[in-house]
Length: 247
Image (cartoon, rainbow, N blue to C red; front, side):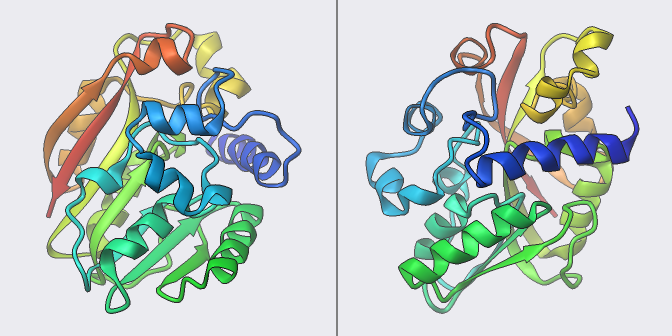
């Protein structure tokens, strides 16, 4: 499927979630609530209660838990959605730090900005943009995080190259993402629901890791979650991979 069509499918899907027109809050195909999904992928009760409006249950891991953020860090979230991970990161980096969220869906950006204003987050900014063409300068951030989003991008290598570009020397990228353990059938690759649900555009595990290396990173797999296949994806042969990539 051509790139423009894929982006249109993805943008429409997440627009409907942001505006409440879709009953689906999961990045997968399950009927679990946002809280149930978030708990199953590693978020604590305290994290889920911090900014509940921002938790849409769209992730496949908790990059905040393993990113090692510290006060003063500049953090970029690729595909920030309603801002859930951004707001959690904001508490880690403090007022001397900064968190930047980039998302391609105007409705998600509007939602995240409203939540930031409501809760008084002054160290978080949200930008409308695409993760394969980031609106940021070279060597400008310390940490990049991404939670179940790179799989939605048609050109994943370009996404990783952009992340590499904006990271400072010795900067790090922390990723939770869906990877395939077996190739999909052609009809699955072209299924709109699977494309929007983080499956149709996913790569085989080894291809995903190779692409990170091809972008210039050194990558280390931190953990693998195969249970997510049954919990959220009706048994499709896939897993959630947690990765640290460093420049």
